[in-house]
Image (cartoon, rainbow, N blue to C red; front, side, top):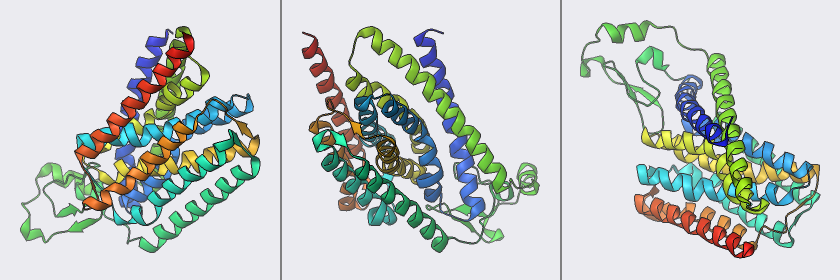
Length: 358
């Protein structure tokens, strides 16, 4: 299969995989009685970051430190500047208070530690273990917060007529901004028609079935990303670009395509929890888990990754705090600024690569 066909097939799989995973994850959150953002921060975020984990681990084992580090640093810059920027341009994103209390500060702290640890171009084993310990603590906090904030199992979409996008039929179920299902008095709603009665009488999907669907959807996303990365790297190598540039750009964007697909779909459906939760959770996973695992297996040496790259990751991570000054809303102008930052960064990288070849 030619590189162009690989890229095309990957994009198609990514689109449909993203559509299906948003739908299944929304239903799972309702079934378990937890807020959708918990699913986005954990199951979906970790699942969509599996490509980065595989690429960085394999690169470390093969001694390609620049590609391993470049993949993580580039993916985080891509997640926040490109993906979240585009999503905010599509639709302003309302960010919950919870993220500003814990998750977003953790993203900033992880970026700062990455800059400190890699300032000597090496990720030592003990530094990687620190990241893994932080990640274990993050997962424990997420589980604890989910248990404390858990509501009684919510009404299933099949029982209420509520779709995965939060729209409801002509019954008395209403989905709140945080994903909670409320029930209005029947007298305030029109009578059910035949289609609504069929939806109401449909057998609810079990949590196990929904988890299985999410796993299948994640597999489709990962396979699509793999095709896209393979095709892109084949094209890049035929053009003669360096390993570091491939890691910071093509592989970073390619392995972030599951996040790009899912977050864009969530933004189009105005599902704020999934749009922001997926990006924040993936950024935490990329830094703490992926660098932690790769560096524990084998100390990573990446001399071609410049402080400039890690400082930009720190800057865009800190930019996640900006919406606090604007009623916790990431407006379109913020998204445009992030997107423009990414475009300038790619231009600078490409210019540097061209100057090396001259």
